[in-house]
Amino acid sequence: MLAPVKPVLAPQPTTDDLHYWDGIAAGQLLLQRCSQCQTMRHPPRPMCGVCNSLSWDAFPSDCRATVISWIIPRHPPVAEGDEQLIALVETTEGARLVVNLRDFPIGESVNDARIEIFMHDVGDGVILPQGRPLGASVAPGEVA
Amino acid sequence: MDPAVADKVAIAGIGHTEYSKNSGRSELQLASEASLAAIRDAGLAPADIDGMVTFTLDTNDELELMNCLGVRELTYFSRTTNGGAGACATVMHAAMAVASGMSKAVLVYRAFNERSGRRFGVPAAGLRSKAENYSAPFGVRTPAQAYSLTFQHYMHKYGVTNEDLGKYSVVARRHAATNPDAWFYQQPITLEDHQNSRWIVEPVLRLLDCCQESDGGVAIVVTSPERARETAHGGVRILAAAQGEAGGSAMIYDYYHPDVSSSPEFSLTGDQLWRDSGLKPGDVSAAMLYENFSPVVFMQLEAFGFCGPGEARDFIAEGNIGLSGILPVNTHGGLLGEAYIHGLNSILEGVRQLRGTAANQLDTVDHVLSASGRSALLLGRV
Image 1: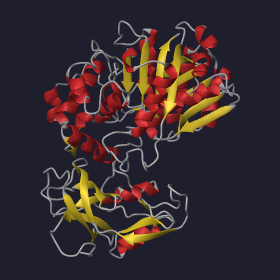
Image 2: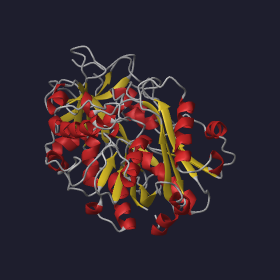
Image 3: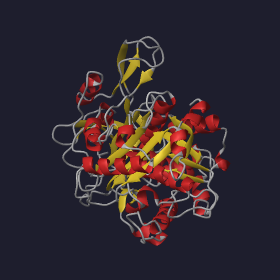
Image 4: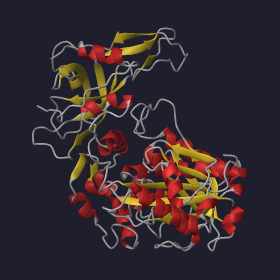
């Protein structure tokens, strides 16, 4: 099992993305959507860049995504077995997220792999969205 | 940039300290030494300087540097964002200040103890911006890691391997090997050395794909062509200067554009240069391309129009970027081979090539591209 480098840098929510991180902590991947023109935007920001509306709501992602790119940090060195597989993924709704991939063989190409996103306590009580192979488990969005 | 600006500005002076891993003196002293060298190279005195531009990341306060140099008054001062990607923007700001009459002589500087002091390559100890909420908690803690998430997509899309990247590193180190100012003077590498160097970020960057961490200072003086002509070397023209930022991005390493394999910012910057100068990539005698990491050279060669998307691998492998190639690149050894003074040292090499004073002097040099991704300059002879 892959483990994140310690100590985990916990997200520092701002006024503009507190709702996102509150959602993550509650086990939900909530994506921001303009109330006026319905355009999804991520990462969260206060104004819609399409219609300039300040009104928005958030809706739960279906937590399905495709891997765009991936890396395994090797320096500074990490203990064998502690390597992290970090990926940039795009959700069905078009949101780009950096996540850690779990339950994938380390070192094999995972470009274009289909994943599901789930919330996971990565240590120190920090809950982050993580990815695992699609179909590997239970309900999407569940806190594992 | 209005092409008329080019007739009102010139680079009249350049200066730098030695490039090291432990300067043994303060960043302010490095800035002062490099600046004084550039001012004298321009045939000016510190009191002639009335403008300053540096990076937002530079620790040297304008007032402190004024007091060290004996600069009396500043009527223009600004700082450029985007870290090293804004390196060429410093000269653009200086040129605009001179062309608009805000300033008569602008000092551009960048100085740091980036190896013996605060190292850029060490994992971040904390979050520095809201944008990092979306990467740092997941273990993206160094520039190498952050940039590699885009590089890996580029490599996957075009079938570029780490060995392909190494072919750039070999060229950079070959150029540095005959540049006495370079930290890696007389230390060329082979592709085998590159492939034997340790992974920094698998499967993208090995150690020899990464720029150095360096101590040192670099400075440039931008003033009028009339003043530049009075110097012994005659100065260098700024034919075009540009910056580029494209909506949708959230950090200088971009994860949010529709196509992660190319940078619309690089293209926006390059397109302005060709439009404003009337030149085309084939008119460029040499290119100094910012490379915190080797893949950035590939992406700039493509965005600035020297080859098509995905073609940089073959362009480099075919020998085009060596000293005898059709586009010699980073003839000083680049940031991998000479030093990493946040890219400002690579602008100096363009000036030297046009003056005819480079260590690896090319035979015929009419136009030099100096590019740092999100900002760039086209330089020419007076």
